[in-house]
Amino acid sequence: MTHLSPGPAAGWSPLARSFHWLVAMLLLAQIPLAWYMVDQPLGPAKLGNYALHKSLGMLVFALTAVRLAWRLTHPAPPLPPGTPGWQRGAARLTQGLLYFLMFAMPLTGWLNSSAANFPVSVFGLFALPNLIEADPVRQQGFEDSHRVQSYLLFAVLTAHLAGALYHQYVKRDGVLAGMLGFGGVHR
Ligand code: HEM
Image 1: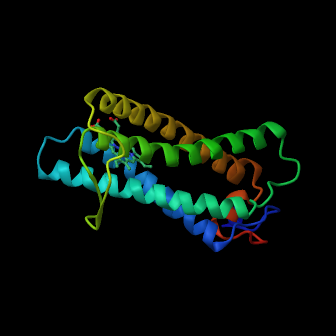
Image 2: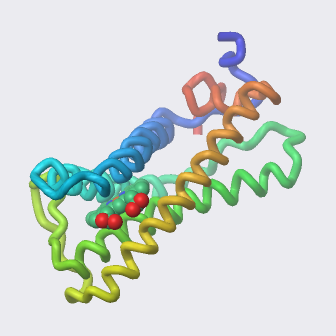
């Protein structure tokens, strides 16, 4: 537990932490669910998993929109003094890519479904409009870009996690503690 004691890094507010861990859990569920569903034989179980994947993905999209609006008006707690410039740059790059992918992945998924003329239902509560006309060629393009984005997301999430573990176990500077709720000043 000593590693989780407050370090010099300031903490994130309860709202920022809730956004972070809720979206983290959704992304960690989405990727294995998607890998599993694409290989399932066609049937009700596969269709149910596709519907769940689309609903969870649109939830990520909505949460990310609210989270980004909040984030743009509430600056992040500063990194510990003395953090090298390249590490600040790497953190900004991975966090920027994560925001980009949390918008781009739901959009290419939604465009893929639209081009296949499969309207997207959100948890069976309401259906989203198709963004484009049915078009098999564009559908394949969106499916391919969604897949490539998923590989990039996996790589960026791994880098993000490696950065968190580096702060926690090598630098021991309280950055992870700040996102877990053990930090000092709340932003
Ligand atoms: C952050 C949100 C999302 C993540 C992380 C994500 C991730 C993935 C991954 C990892 C795959 C498997 C790719 C492969 O290996 O073939 C996949 C497939 C798929 N996703 Fe998503 N997805 C997201 C959002 C969405 C949304 C919002 C939709 C639709 C509204 C969607 C529709 C699909 C479809 C239809 C496939 C299957 C494509 C195929 O049959 O090959 N996804 N997604």
